[in-house]
Length: 90
Image (cartoon, rainbow, N blue to C red; front, side, top):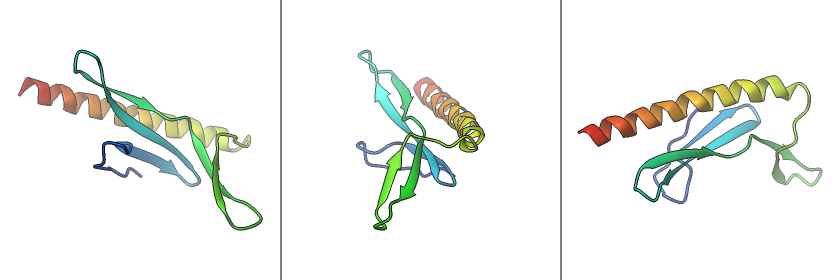
């Protein structure tokens, strides 16, 4: 699932799969060209007091899920790069 955001202080997309998520950030080079970076995969969890937290620690069974998620993020970054390229040609 991808959530687009409009606030420049927010990621341009978040790709999620269950409790795991990766954020995609749009940046600009010194020459004014856009490029994208990503966060590390994060896992949400709830502590004994019921408070939510995020960690980059994964269980063994979540490694395949994270690998799949990174593939989806790669595809989305490529789509964003292509859209930027097409916009620069217009």
